[in-house]
Length: 360
View 1 (spheres, helix red, strand yellow):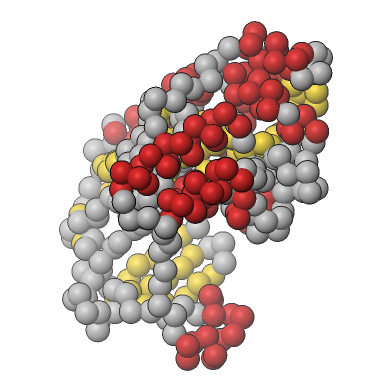
View 2 (tube, one colour):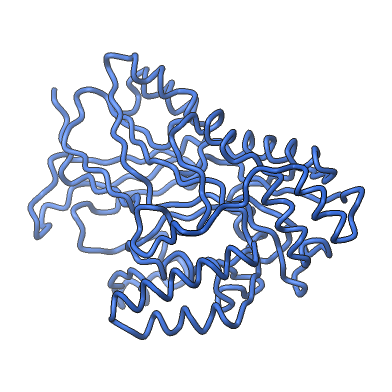
């Protein structure tokens, strides 16, 4: 259930380990230049089978700060931007020179708790399901969605979004209940709570527009039940490498689906096959044999009714074990200057610019 692309054997042989710096393909644009952390330049492929794009050149600029991105768009130095913050949406809507496109997101933002005893970041409390349930009860998701996402998301209770088939809406979320959280911590042997570290992404993502602020909100909620969590952040590439290596006790992350299939969420993010220290997609390092058997069975049948029942059961198992606190499913946004036309939003967040044209 994965997407894939053809690879040129000649280009692989020519560039070797630097192949990724010299992409070769058959799409509507051709690679021109990549300057790491600055920009990527493409030009129209005149031989594209679907007809040449309307624009001659396409430049992707790396501007990590969403506020700076918006300023650049308002100044006219860029034509569009992704991932505006919820705080800036009203400002954008009031600007007659800009417009927003939005769509339901095929995504999930979550807090993963490291259950892997073989990982460097494992801490004993997270091996106890009562502690994980306490954290689920301690986090005020409705408030996070209302005041930080500002209504641009819905609270999450499952690892797959509500717009995806096989979503198990019968599951009841762990309600915000600090008193219940304190009670569970006492049962688990932590009447005074404990100290830990919460890893937070340094960049905005489609499933989490402002990770630092969300981390601060979670930090405050945890402190209210006795869990003192220090927030840690590091450069994005390093963050991904270190969470894949299991160096975190807890971390914020998320996922945007590739293909609209539940397998692309549940197997990729929560199966034991994905809990390999050093290359984990399952950064909770959650390993459940029953879940694994269900997911493999679902991969091996074409019967949609059977697959639906299997994925509904998988969500029940995950809910009971609490490897994550799912936070939110966010809408996705793109912002454009008024003279930019022809862009189409896709829930998978894939972006196609061959249909885009600019009114002069």
